[in-house]
Each structure stands twice: as structure tokens, then as C-alpha cells.
Length: 72
Image (tube, rainbow, N blue to C red):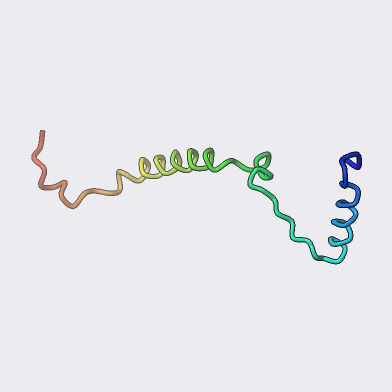
């Protein structure tokens, strides 16, 4: 890592600023991927969960118009 031109100087400066509490780390969204689901995976799981909730609750909910529908 120190072989990269100017990297040693940059690391020393970053270390000095961090010790002075003058650094705000920016961590990109990809940082959490190993520990958390991605947005796509989350939305897929969430939508499947919502379908399950509505499926489970459907016997308890009736349309106010269902009594006026013709039988058969």
C-alpha cells in the first residue's frame, strides 16, 4: 500500500486528521452487502411477505359489495 506514489504521505495525513477527529468516513452502499440483503433482495422478500399477509388475512376481509353479486 505504501508503494503507491504519495500513498504514504496521504495515509499519514489521514491518520493525523483522524486523531484530531476531523474525518467523516463515507462508506458506500456496497459495504453492507455481506451482512445485509441488497435492495433488490429486500424488495423481493418484502413483496413475498406482503402476499403472504394478504393471503392469510383474506378470509377476514369481505367486500361490501360481495352480498350483491349474483350466485353461480
